[in-house]
Image 1: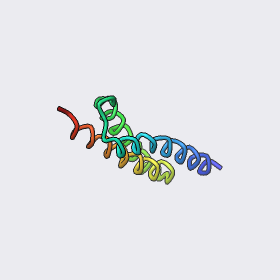
Image 2: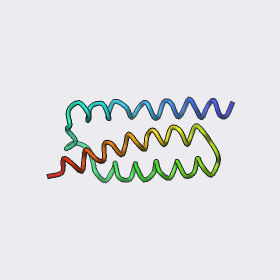
Image 3: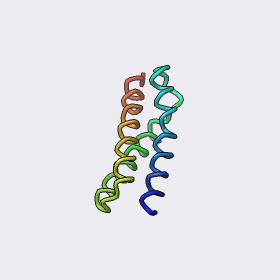
Image 4: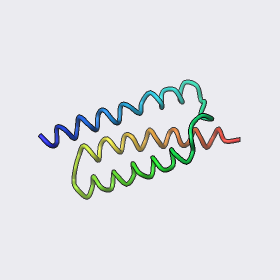
Amino acid sequence: MTEILGFIAAILTTTAFIPQVIKVYKTNHTSDLSLLTFLMFTIGVFCWIIYGLILNSYPLIIANIITFLLACYILVKIFKNIK
Protein backbone atom coordinates (compact mmCIF):
# COMPACT_ATOMS: atom_id res chain seq x y z
CA MET A 1 0.00 0.00 0.00
CA THR A 2 2.86 2.37 0.76
CA GLU A 3 4.38 1.90 -2.70
CA ILE A 4 1.00 2.50 -4.35
CA LEU A 5 0.61 5.77 -2.44
CA GLY A 6 4.15 6.69 -3.49
CA PHE A 7 3.40 6.01 -7.15
CA ILE A 8 0.19 8.06 -6.99
CA ALA A 9 2.06 10.98 -5.42
CA ALA A 10 4.88 10.60 -7.96
CA ILE A 11 2.51 10.62 -10.92
CA LEU A 12 0.60 13.66 -9.68
CA THR A 13 3.62 15.79 -8.77
CA THR A 14 5.52 14.92 -11.94
CA THR A 15 2.60 15.47 -14.32
CA ALA A 16 1.75 18.75 -12.58
CA PHE A 17 5.08 20.09 -13.86
CA ILE A 18 4.43 19.15 -17.51
CA PRO A 19 2.17 22.13 -18.42
CA GLN A 20 5.01 24.54 -17.58
CA VAL A 21 7.41 22.58 -19.79
CA ILE A 22 4.90 22.56 -22.64
CA LYS A 23 4.35 26.31 -22.31
CA VAL A 24 8.10 27.02 -22.38
CA TYR A 25 8.52 24.67 -25.35
CA LYS A 26 5.72 26.30 -27.36
CA THR A 27 6.47 29.93 -26.53
CA ASN A 28 10.21 29.85 -25.79
CA HIS A 29 9.30 32.52 -23.19
CA THR A 30 11.04 32.25 -19.82
CA SER A 31 11.40 35.85 -18.64
CA ASP A 32 8.59 35.39 -16.11
CA LEU A 33 10.33 32.38 -14.55
CA SER A 34 12.72 32.76 -11.64
CA LEU A 35 16.19 31.40 -12.34
CA LEU A 36 16.92 31.07 -8.61
CA THR A 37 13.70 29.17 -8.02
CA PHE A 38 14.42 26.71 -10.84
CA LEU A 39 18.03 26.26 -9.70
CA MET A 40 16.91 25.51 -6.15
CA PHE A 41 14.11 23.26 -7.39
CA THR A 42 16.42 21.29 -9.69
CA ILE A 43 19.03 20.79 -6.98
CA GLY A 44 16.27 19.71 -4.59
CA VAL A 45 14.92 17.20 -7.09
CA PHE A 46 18.44 15.83 -7.58
CA CYS A 47 18.65 15.36 -3.80
CA TRP A 48 15.33 13.48 -3.89
CA ILE A 49 16.82 11.15 -6.52
CA ILE A 50 19.78 10.41 -4.23
CA TYR A 51 17.42 9.91 -1.29
CA GLY A 52 15.28 7.54 -3.36
CA LEU A 53 18.37 5.57 -4.35
CA ILE A 54 19.41 5.28 -0.70
CA LEU A 55 15.93 4.03 0.23
CA ASN A 56 15.64 1.96 -2.95
CA SER A 57 12.24 3.59 -3.53
CA TYR A 58 11.19 3.30 -7.15
CA PRO A 59 8.43 5.94 -6.94
CA LEU A 60 10.94 8.49 -5.64
CA ILE A 61 13.61 7.53 -8.13
CA ILE A 62 11.46 7.38 -11.27
CA ALA A 63 9.35 10.47 -10.60
CA ASN A 64 12.29 12.62 -9.64
CA ILE A 65 14.42 11.55 -12.60
CA ILE A 66 11.59 12.57 -14.91
CA THR A 67 11.03 15.83 -13.02
CA PHE A 68 14.79 16.50 -12.98
CA LEU A 69 14.97 16.15 -16.77
CA LEU A 70 11.98 18.45 -17.23
CA ALA A 71 13.43 21.03 -14.85
CA CYS A 72 16.80 20.86 -16.62
CA TYR A 73 15.04 21.56 -19.92
CA ILE A 74 13.49 24.70 -18.45
CA LEU A 75 16.80 25.75 -16.87
CA VAL A 76 18.55 25.43 -20.23
CA LYS A 77 15.85 27.56 -21.83
CA ILE A 78 16.12 30.18 -19.07
CA PHE A 79 19.90 30.39 -19.52
CA LYS A 80 19.55 30.64 -23.31
CA ASN A 81 17.04 33.49 -22.94
CA ILE A 82 19.08 35.57 -20.46
CA LYS A 83 20.07 38.84 -22.08
